[in-house]
Image (cartoon, rainbow, N blue to C red; front, side, top):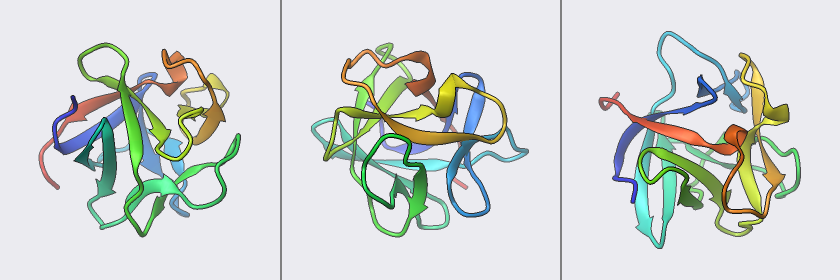
Length: 136
């Protein structure tokens, strides 16, 4: 299982960050967003950002909705993809959806969204490497 602590998240050789409106996107920055993994048991976690916000969903869960920084803890189901440091994330209330890089792109500015994917072996654009980092 993933240990609690601070991590950068990387997908397809780019980093999970936020735009000016707190929407999730891939973008390599000088300092990438750090997420604090809080383990909740049963392969569930919350991902807290240094500013006190959490990675979550603001609107209805549906294809194409962006993940965002939200004000309250949001519960994710986390699944190992390589028995090491790569995981997929699914909303705890709908595990038929997976967090992924839109259109399988990895360029800066690519939106991070939810999409229906029922196979629990996630595609490459839905696999996030959790890279341990120092506390911000």
